Amino acid sequence: MSVEEFETKELGKTHNYLTVVEFLTHTFKSSNVKCRCGCGKETKAELRNLYRGHKKSCGCLIPRSHIK
Image 1 (cartoon, rainbow, N blue to C red):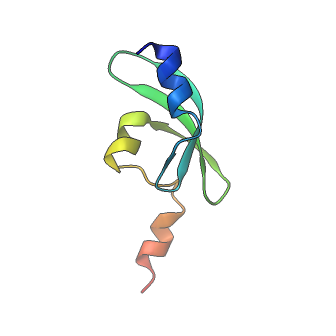
Image 2 (image 1 turned 90 degrees about the horizontal axis):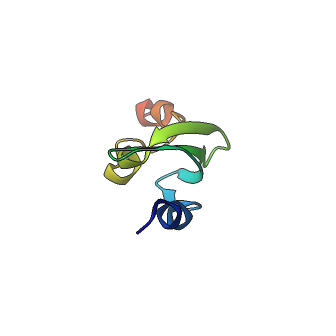
């Protein structure tokens, strides 16, 4: 699969609360992407962290997890 095909396949895909909107850099080991969160903010992330579930939002979920 070429880089262009990979990027086309991933654009618009949602991982937890983050939707991939743009590829910023693409190297052999990692891809940095710009994402739009469900709350409307934009953030940058490594694509592998989205796949693994290490990054789920722009940070808006952190305060919610502390509310009991």
